[in-house]
Length: 399
Image (cartoon, rainbow, N blue to C red):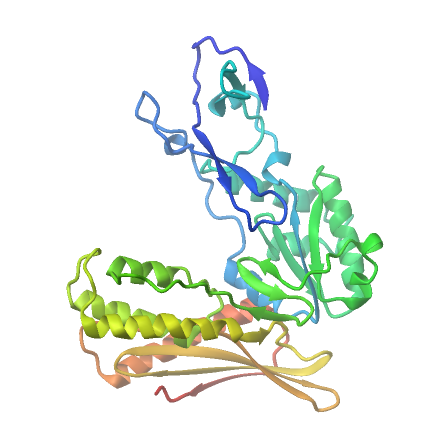
């Protein structure tokens, strides 16, 4: 940012800001939050008059599914990505803040000169910059181009390959390409013992756990873990139930049966016509407390990240679906066979829907499950982009 002398003339916007303290973060524990949605004296905010640019980044589901197909995988992120992208000088007047260095110190006016988190256009500007970087440097870094387009979610990169040599070359090209834009990649983490043993050269962190787009990944065990911390509530309300369900982050549907039960329970509360702050009836409260206690078992679940056997010669996707009176759903499995005849079958993803309140016949709900399976299969095929020998659709029996 730059200090200015504000004389009150011309168009300007002052953004309120505050500190956000997150002690669990390994690097920046205290971050600044900017509120560009706060209305000014004209009753308009900066965000209310900005174009958001539309969605330009890849879907999180696609990136997570692709991350599971690599034998050797790694994660990294772009250090202070937004702060590496300049705003046009004519626009910085819309990013003013007031600041003083301490109690009793004079208040000074500054203008932020880079893309600011909290403005509605920030994600579009950041991803648009990365796409332009990929277009400019595609010929110089051929391995890196597909990564920016399909394996980058904001400032996080999740990628990998079938060979260690290619992963090392990919890492080298990523570092060099982002250097051309003045950006630095850090927090490298991977399941590559040959590279993690040489930290000085490859700068991979030795970490037992890291976050991969919100999901805990243990690179040493190469599996996904879940950490759900639930405190036994003193009172149970519909608001508290919904808040608990929302905290279970599962973009791949690996905890499908757990979340499905919670959705069915929430539907029951709607039928009881309870207010958000109303206490749950005795029967429902007892069920919910039993569910909260059982969530601790989720912390013992470990699911393999890699779903494809090394040097696979045959790969097929298998979709299953079924329905009951309360819910319908689908799951996708990947079966891979190596040249030696070794077989590996892994759950790729699952999805479920609670049956509508209006009673529908079981055959129609089964058809809904089949449609859900077809749509889910299409998404998985597009995300994996593998040469498949077979796609199978079948039925499973829901209890």
